[in-house]
Image (cartoon, rainbow, N blue to C red; front, side):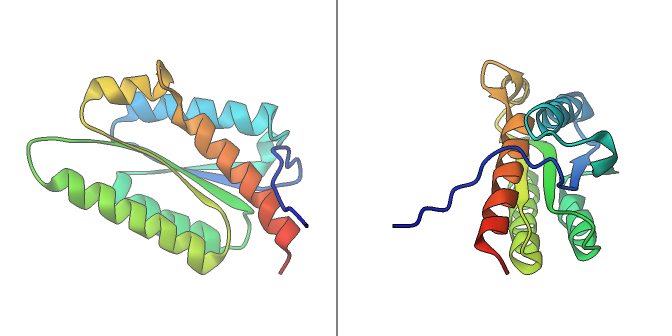
Length: 156
């Protein structure tokens, strides 16, 4: 039986990180985690990483699509934070963001990691940005690296 499984190092990969500026006090920590992971574990040089900042989570899919269409990147790490409020806005933003990013990955056939926190409150967001629950930016970067290697192993 042949087993195809990704590994983490991808030193030749070109990665785009697209991040929402809204809730930047959380998102900056996600970016720090992703960058550290890409450089230390992925062995990717600074010049092979591009950081794109967009206003909010709803804009992440459009920026990711443009990055994917450029064919300059092997993978995209999408980062952001949507915190539930008192209206249905949370469902619309988080749902459309998730669907849009998944669609980009399927259409462009490159890894697009969903590193967007969708939390009930600010405390949960803080926990997932580098405290009790780890750093989801790290997890998104690891997923991107592994999937780049899986996709390469699968071929065209």
